[in-house]
Length: 596
Image (cartoon, rainbow, N blue to C red; front, side):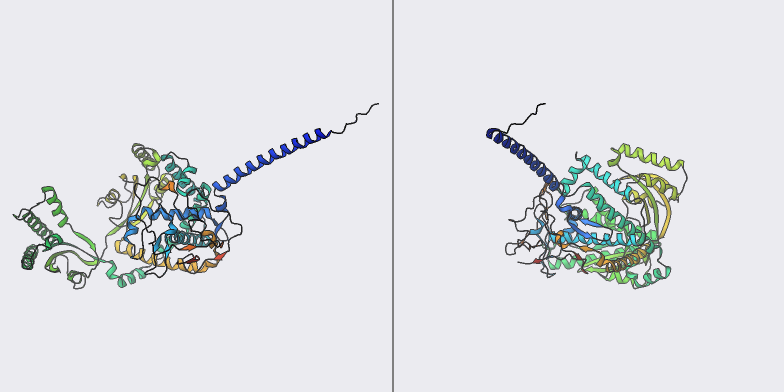
């Protein structure tokens, strides 16, 4: 029996084996490092650091920074879409934003009136934060009161599908579309998480609103009518003005000529007033007014001293404009007509001459005396079907016809129509109650307020929004009551929300530091198609930008050398959890802001 004994390795063999093992280990480490780098890069590009930063917490909800970024940028885009209206409402101390630049270096308000300077970044942070706090309060209140909304998942899925449809039109998938609008941080799940909160809160708020609307009593309506007569009483009238001199002509008119024009205006007004008063009955008075105005404007246009007369079409448009009835006008103390019509008890059919400016005279023919508007509002159900969803106008129309046919084959009535609407409607609501004339788009309005309309009528109406399958559900309350109910409920909802937020303010933890870790720029890809740069509110040279040190590292977060505001940059991962604070009594999210 023999035994095999291993010979010891020679020094050369030992060295070779050691090198081989070292190489294997080195390769393994390199592979692991590369894999780790790839994984970490993916973590960064998927918004990982922001997702682990919690901005708001309640017993049942968490809002992380990815979700907050989505809300923040939506606030920005809403402002951007309503840019003209936003500019119109700005105070002298405010400036417009340039959405292509960092919003932290631009001032929403320099504080010259408010006393507190605020950047546009802070403005949008607070706007988004206020909305989230309100949603959290409503959602927690809903859970506490065992409110359920069974279609929540369905509504979320439908919204996501609508986003996918929009993305498809831009030849993008949903991930790339979200990246275009919100940068790397926001993914589909983040949107779903926000929607879960927002829709649930909105449905509970809608329930509370409906409950309060149903609870309005006749006693409340009578009290409102008595206390708010000036707000709910209206008049209808025709009016025509004499003697108004344009600013261009005024510079070339002497004082004597102005006196002559004024005297002629007074005489013309007297003539019109006489013709109206001489007519018998409302229709005749209106005809007298229109005939005089037509003849007067025609004569003025053909006068020898007119250097640039209106064309026949332009003259017809001018006559139509000047002979249109003014409807549902509230009290106005701009001239004596307001007191004459509302306070002096004058009746429909009466007319008056009023000096409405220096040397300017206006004749008013009252066609409805001051009082509440008792005209009926309308109730309507509809199902909206759009070209966007069905691919073409022809297919959307065909679908509308198919949907109406489905309703006509089954049970009739509002409840049956709503069952069909639940399957197909693309609008946020399928039922509009107490609709006042003129509030809906023209085609919708004309069908709804057709004098021949009867309860149960159905039809298909096309508007700029798509095809509407309509169901008329009869008259609502009188218009003044609809306005009164709206005002009473609005006041009640404000009181309810104020008390609810006060009750739940300690239930919402705001991680303030985390709020300021989101980017202060709009992703470049979201505004890449802009053809012009919006006029911007950069701080003047003598005013230094407000600097923030929200993370406490001693470096101003918005200093150009320390803060990368590119769309692709993700927020650095925090090494320490943010300090938790409860929601403050104020609606402003406080920041460590000091005006330089």
